[in-house]
Length: 94
Image 1 (cartoon, rainbow, N blue to C red):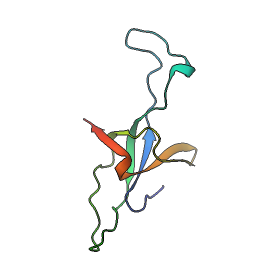
Image 2 (image 1 turned 90 degrees about the horizontal axis):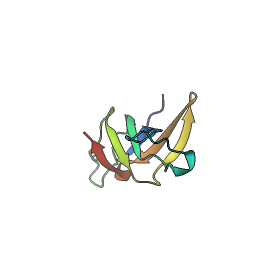
Image 3 (image 1 turned 90 degrees about the vertical axis):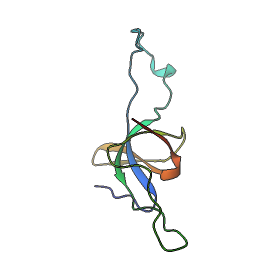
C-alpha cells in the first residue's frame, strides 16, 4: 500500500451520480471534476521549526471536499488515487 509522507493525504475520488435527483441523466460533457473524496491514508504531519510534527486535520475514512485542482494523480495496484497536501482539503463531510 502507499504511505504518504509529511502532510500529504492519499484519497480516492468519489464519482458523482450519473442522474440528478429529478431523474435527468447527465452527459459526460456536463460533469465537472469530482471534488469529494474518501481519505485512504494520512501522513504523519509536516515537520515544524521546533522539531514537532503538525497535527493532521483528517483521519482515514473521512469524506472530504478538495480544492478543485489539487493533488497528483497516481495509479497503484490497478486503482487510481490522488495525493494532496493537508492544506488542499477544504472541508470534512459529516
